[in-house]
Amino acid sequence: MSRKASSREDVEIRWFTDDKFDGTRIDKNRCIYKNKDGTETITGFGQITRDANGKPFVERRCKTVQALNINDILRRVKETGGVVVVLPP
Image (tube, rainbow, N blue to C red):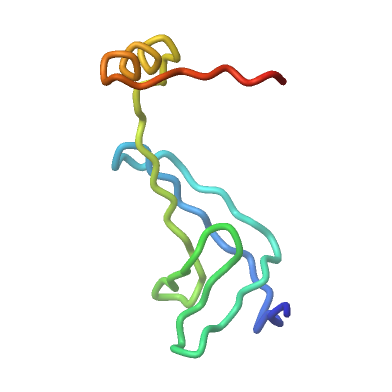
């Protein structure tokens, strides 16, 4: 069962990378859903907040991490006594 949007508004998305402000983006005409507890959410970003002027915004936070190396993973599995099974495509 799909929910019905309580309103459609432009939502500002504020991007943070490693807790440093990275910029903003405006998503036009997004569906805003009102929950029973009074909070508002949008699909894909979660709970929204409203600024002093009543404009909705969402903060999106990311962390940079080290890329996974398959050779390191396989070595770790073998060191711990695990078995690597290769399945056909």
